[in-house]
Image 1 (cartoon, helix red, strand yellow):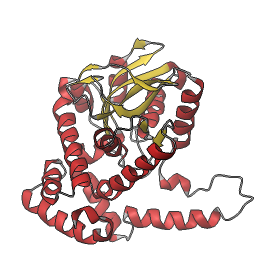
Image 2 (cartoon, rainbow, N blue to C red):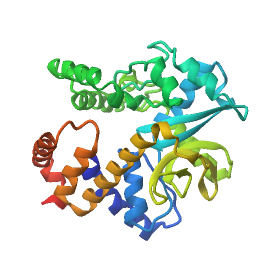
Image 3 (tube, helix red, strand yellow):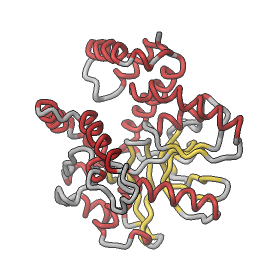
Image 4 (tube, one colour):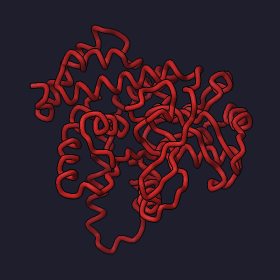
Length: 321
């Protein structure tokens, strides 16, 4: 949330520069939180050529292809949700739905086969949960459905002096030193610990498809426009789109699946509150947004956390002054 508070005003300034200097350019945004940044651009500017990008869906695509033992180019996913809180609600091989098979196989994956990211621990979900929701969750759902285990792991990392932000800082220092070598022609091992696998593939595929009007299917963050019935039309969603010279064309998914609808709608409400607070500097709204997130256990704690983080990030949050 506080990453959004710091980043959204900067991105909105950048968008204004794009509109002034190159209004026909496509803006492909990697900055996190990608979905909330897309939400801010869609609702607080009149720029309609911004596309949010994340490496989670492309890694989900690859992981589900492995589970099904099919080539990635034969697979397509139907996604419903928002950035870092998205579900594969249908799976197609050669254009034919294989959701039942995908759910059954994913319900029994081993720890090594579970959809995972390099930057945090991943725990397989129970067969009952996967069968019950009849969908495949993204790796970030670990934080919401394995909260106790994830918190225990992070506290252990804290005790070892390996808080994720500090690890990233050390990795980046090492990487920038390695990149001083102009003759470097191999990928540094440190990148495997940094996270961001397949980001380059996702970005280059998107740029090429817009440039060549390819019309292939990719997963991006865009305006909903009725693609997912049950979420606001003006909101940013993470969905499968056909990529053309006119940008991403969202593929309609129908009604938000009832088994995941409540959670997704709550997260979208949280995102919209965060974005409004980031733009307006409304501290009360920021606290309320934090309380709406299921990872926040109480009203009292939300106020304490907000106070501490407002102070810690004060230099980067002029809108809350």
